[in-house]
Image 1 (cartoon, rainbow, N blue to C red):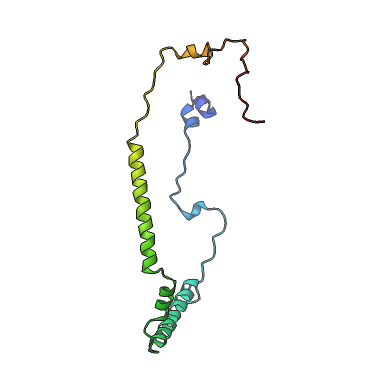
Image 2: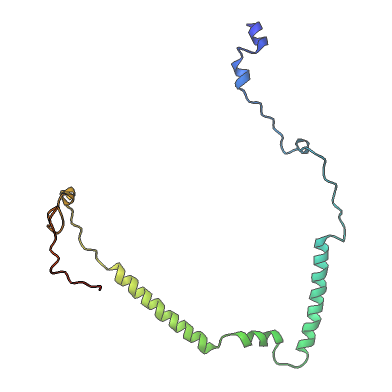
Length: 153
């Protein structure tokens, strides 16, 4: 038996067992050189965006104070929004039209939900319809075309 074990012939458990190496997310498992560390400081993109947004907010507050201190009744943005808004009459007209359409849709759904389907007629032997013509015309006979009215000329 020891001869067979040394040869590796009779050890079925060794050949069927899969070797699984657990890496646990270590950096040693990655091949290749490591990336150099990134430069951190006040020149990063996030710092630039923050600085620009702070300067923009300060500038906006100064412009806003200047625009509202000129004695105008409304802020320019308020006037801009009011210029492009719908009037109250137009909004009421649209709302009334929507209410009418919703009422019509509700009436139609109520009508269709109350509809009753015609009763189904269960045929006892439906295969018999395949044996004969539905118009009582025998197979091989000639249909008389004397009474046919042509629709297209």
